[in-house]
Length: 130
Length: 130
Length: 130
Image (cartoon, rainbow over all chains, first blue to last red; front, top):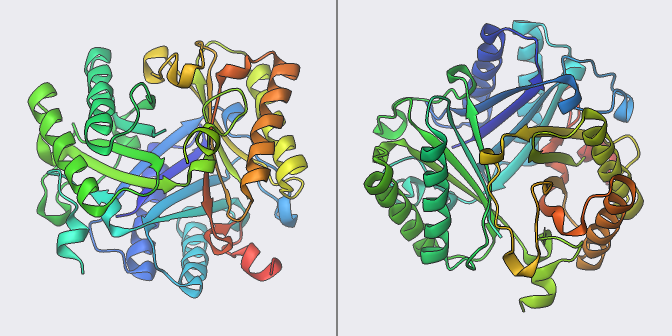
C-alpha cells in the first residue's frame, strides 16, 4: 500500500532511479513487512531550482544528489520499526547505489486501511485485512 | 477542499486528462458531498520509468494506463462512504473514458478543517464551517 | 521538517519561484517556529491543463497565477497559529512578489516526529526533540 514519491535533481540515469525505487520497495517489504508486490511509485526529476533544500540542516551535509522520499503508508508501525526502516534504507542505498548517507531525506505519512483502493473500485484492505 | 494529485504515464490527450479530472471532481461532489466548485487538481504525466508499479498486486492486472489518484481531503467520512466513492469513481471512469477498472489506484489522506486556506490567507473552514 | 510542495502554472521566472519558496520558508520559521535552515521544497511548474482549479470557489476569484502550497509538517500547531501562518504568508507573498491574495491555496498535512529522517538514516526528532 505504500505510495512512494521520490523527488530528485535531474541528471541521474533511469537505471539509477529504477534501482533506487527497487531498494525502497524491498526495504519496505523486509523491514516494515509491507506485502510483496505492493509497489507503487512516482519518481520525478526536477531541475536544480525545483528542489531547493538546506545543505546543512541539523549538521548533515547534503549534496545535489539528495533524494526526497515521501512515503504514504498504512498507519500503525512502531517508532522502533520506523527507525529500523530509515537505517536499513539508507545503508542499502549507500551500499547498492553509492548514495551518501547524508543525502536521503525521508518522510512518512500514515493513513488507515479504508483509505486505499488498489483497483476495481474496492477498498481491498477493508475486506481482505482485518 | 480536496487537493487531488493525478499521476499517469505520458501519452494520453489533454482532453482525456481533463475529463478524468472532471469525473473525479463530480464524484467527490456526488458521493462524498464535497461542496460544488471545490476543484483543485494537480495532473502530472510521467515517462514510463517515472511511474513504476506492480502489474498484479492483489491479483489485479494493471496496464500502462493505470492512474494514481492521491486525494487530500477533510477528515471524517465513514468507511462505507469511502467504499462508495471508490466504486462510483471507478465505474464512471470505466463508462466515460473506458479506463479499465483495474487501472485506478486511489489513496486518501485526511486532514482537519483548520488545515485549509482557499485564498486571502484565511482558514475558511474554521470560520464558515462549524 | 516541513516538506513543502509548491505547484504552479508554467511561465514564471526561476527567480520568482525561488523567492516564493524563500517566503514560505521564512514564514514557517517566523510564525510556526520551524527551526532555522529546515528548508526542503519541491517546486513544480505545470502546463495550464495540468493545474485545473475553480476560479471562484468560496467567492474567491483566482487567476492563472494561483499557487498551490501543500506543506507536510510536524503535528501540534494550534488553530490560531495556523491562521496566523496563512495570513502572514499571503501578506508577504502579496508584498514581496505581488501575488494576488486570492491566488494562494494552502493545505497542511501533519505527521508525528518519528515520521522524519533528515539524513544518515536516523529519526532525528525522536532522539533530539523530546
